Length: 285
Image (cartoon, rainbow, N blue to C red; front, side, top):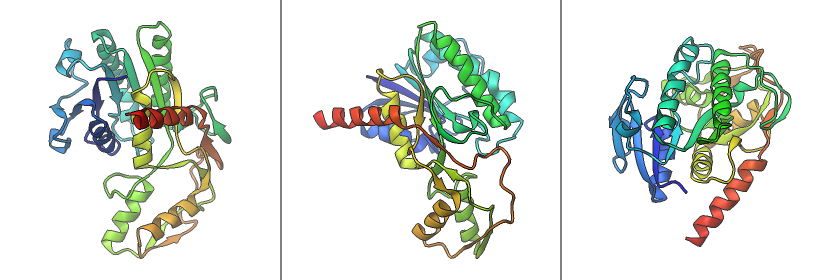
């Protein structure tokens, strides 16, 4: 089990609830972000540029047993040039942590590594990413899996799907709906909404990340997911109703993105096993 956990991007969209859950569970947490004011004050808060070329990065970041690497720029801008420009920085940073002595590494992945695919995604599903975001994530995953095969560290590649959160910060469809409602908009331009995706609430995702990163039995590619597909239209309409938004979707204004599958979801076999074990361990405590 992890003792001292470093979370990068700890002040971000996913990092905030992950950090809070780790602290609530009694872990010693080092929270790192470029904006330390956004960090949970219960953690050891570090404002550090993780991509700076420091030879002692592992020590500078508290010498953690476990790293949860969530930091990623422009995650919702799938064809931003930043993804590929930063790829080597992620590789260098992760290797500095591994070389320093961190032996348990959990990295946030994305189903966009896979590209166009119909059906359930598991760790053996072929990847052919169709966006700069997907290409960069996939390249990082492939590089880390090759290195993990040498046996010097454990790698958990946490493949995320479509995140639902009532948080106006960010660029997801749900954040944009909240922003539009706050402006007083009563209509929202939309796609056909027929594509079916694997949606997971932000709190559920954070719980899965913590459960995965603080265990050692199951490693490799792990789907952090719900394990079921729901149409985009149905999930967005549900979100509008849940949050009492006075806004109506204008279907068909935007075309469906060519790299989005009509039906895709994560195989939940691994995550169900991890969550069951995590629940049992907490019950015993």
